[in-house]
Length: 242
Picture 1 (tube, one colour):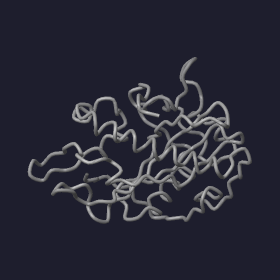
Picture 2 (cartoon, helix red, strand yellow; picture 1 turned 90 degrees about the vertical axis):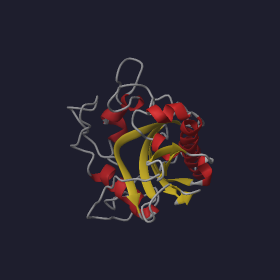
Picture 3 (tube, rainbow, N blue to C red; picture 1 turned 45 degrees about the horizontal axis):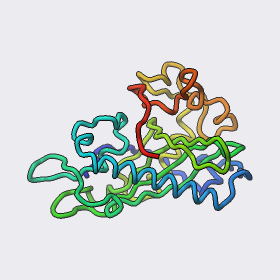
Picture 4 (spheres, one colour; picture 1 turned 120 degrees about the vertical axis):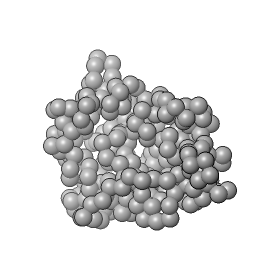
């Protein structure tokens, strides 16, 4: 897979685990979420990403038409680039053989029932059988997710969030740190054009004290559905595997 979109930032600010955001402001430690559960949540998200990419790899007709993956969130990782055909082809090996998915940080609300997730994707093999997966030195991406659950003992339901993504970085830390910087510092006052988040836009950054309580992300779209359950431009529920 050849990734050609890159987000470049002048400022790179280090983050420390789940206790500090990209402004250096300490984030609250959520007592409702144990260390064991935190690690289990991270594993669940990683498996969710890999399973969804594998879903599109197995269902090649969906990949060919880009059908259903409205945000193009998983589909590209199910393809290799065939130089001879000058086109994308479906990956012929399991996703786990060429991708590493690592959750860097999960930010929770006070009850541990809502969360915002920062995830890094490493394309660990540059080419297989003559097919290009990624250019050397551009093999790290970073993406974000929203997670919710009804009870603290439950697994989380996971939804891709597409406002910002990072593509084609040279290492994991820079990719994830820059994604954090955007969400911790640039989300407030921004919007998502031609979507149900526009024109009102976002009034909180991730990490703000009132983010989980007041952000438009967690408000109802209608009587039965929340905004985070919809793709940003098609207003269609995500059908992806949990």
